[in-house]
Amino acid sequence: MMATDAARTRRAWLLMALAPADRSYGGNDGYEDDISTFYSWNSRVPNSRAIAVGDRVVLWDKLGLLGFSTVEKITTGTGTVDRRLCPTCGSADIKYRKTKSPDWRCFDCYTEFDDADTEVVEVTTFRADYGSEWVDAPGVMTAAEVRRLALSPRSQHAMREADWQVVQDALVSKGRQA
Ligand SMILES: [Zn+2]
Image (tube, rainbow, N blue to C red; front, side):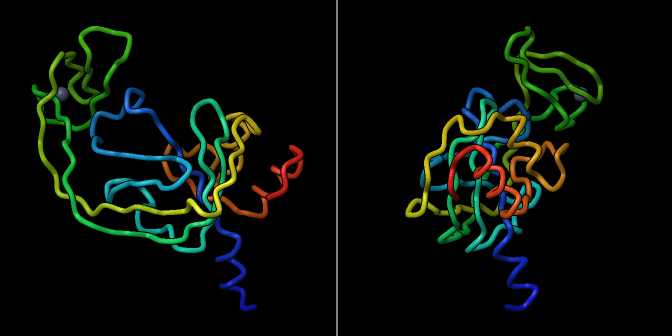
């Protein structure tokens, strides 16, 4: 096997699954996920074009591991997302605050406000299907343990690259065959 093929078979992606109410980044809307069968994202997400058929995927959320699988198909399309903007300065660097009022805060001009402006942005949409090889593994690892599997453990991205061999070793150490 050539080195590039070996690298390909080892590649995994840690995919963060978020409940709609938890999507705190102001700029992103319009995701839909059924975590055991497919994951969808758009071209505004870092690494959006890097994931490929044959890559391993590891689904997790803020509570920990959910399961893992292998990508069977990537479907691309076009769509739009609503981008939320600060009504005062127009910045997209705003954050929704679940527990504070006003609901939103701008990190550029520091205004706080209840209603963000909305701008419709065209995006490329991506969907990875992986349902046939899905393995349920809820709670097998904590979120902190999953986060450490990423090549960049401090990454905040929804899609984080990892080494499948490292993921497999971690699963085996938890008593799970991968
Ligand atoms: Zn602002």
